[in-house]
Length: 77
Image (tube, rainbow, N blue to C red; front, side, top):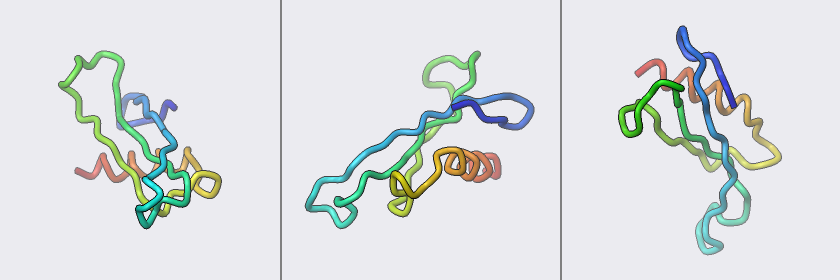
């Protein structure tokens, strides 16, 4: 998913994952994301990271809002 990031446009990847059944958050599919990625970056030289929260449950959390929240948080660093 592309999203404005400063003066550029970054790529974010939203994924769905599940914790093991024995984990306290193991009953739901959760959303996480990776990014920001920029077209001209070289591998391993980016500021990209990963992010997820147990409250971002698939079907209840909105992927677009997740990316917006993370981009705001990441730009404040």
